[in-house]
Amino acid sequence: MGQEQFRTENGGSGVNDQTDWEDFPRRIKGEVFERLSKVIDPELGRSITDLGMITDIVVVPRRDTTEADYDVTVRVELTIKGCPLSQTITNQINGAVSSYPRARLHSRIDVASMSKEKLNNLVADLKAARRSNPFTKPGIKTRIFAIASGKGGVGKSSVTVNLAATLAALGYDTAAIDADIYGFSLPNLFGVDTQPTNLNGMLMPVTAWGVKLISIGMFAGSDRAILWRGPRLQRSLEQFLSDVWWGDPDVLLLDLAPGTGDMALSVAQALPNSELVVVTTPQPSASDVAVRSGLVALQVPTRVRGVVENMSWYDHQDEHLEIFGSGGGQRVSDQLTEALGYQVPLLAQLPLQPEVRTVGESGRPAVLKPDGSLDDSDLARRFVDLAKTLMSATS
Image (cartoon, rainbow, N blue to C red):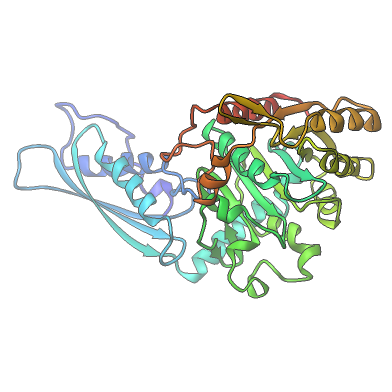
């Protein structure tokens, strides 16, 4: 039902001695609808009224009281039966109704699911508004950072996870793609064991710790998943971008497979506005190959934003132990700066801490407290500095 059907004729917003009390339920109905227009579907990122989820609002005065008490029934149609975030939506609706200031409203939510035709029309409208890959549109505000490494084992995925969680905790609308198709690890590190919601061929990313996330690791029997309509490796990134409803995130992180293979080239080609962040550890065996992952910028239109040195030291009983040596991050920075002809800074040095593994393997990024707020640890502060540096730098 359209918004105009809920608006009152006079548009009034208050009650006074001249108010027609028999007309007041109509006014409540219109004002409740206006309040519900502020309720945002957490998956689609749009108002539930704009999405056509509110089909009716029924306001009935209670006859057994002299107070301004009303029973308000809100009829809601969710996108699919068993929508995983239905409780979140109904809680927000109840909050919008119960906080109405001009009368005491007692809410009741009637929940149904959209008809197949209505859902098809909604999905078609969403896809038309997005027009395939949403991150290459003119004027796109999303900052895109591809997290790369020359070899495995340097903590690239843990850097991606903790950086994403930090950005989300700082208030950025944050998304992450696990682009390491065969070595995916982001679902475990984020504690995700559910599949994305499928809206007639359009997928809703799973949200964990404030981060919208997609990974082939979320799909049981990935060869049968809707995401894979063609050769898996070649088309996976394209489908991650075009078949998933991302909304308009402030920042998108991609956890790349180690090395300089096809996926790194695919990212640079599909997302020419992406910026590369190279992760290395201090020892030469890691830093030398890390340089190669940055040199991909010589072949494709992408820019290397900087270098992150992970596992730089380990503090043990007041000793500052450089277990993997020192200087690797700076060597990568210097060599890429010389080869690419512009400054590639060393953005951060991160300590080796067992908590990154133990907390991460429990499904919570190590930079966060159990309640999802940022920790006050040295590690969290370093990731905050890294996040702010990336988001403040011009591309």
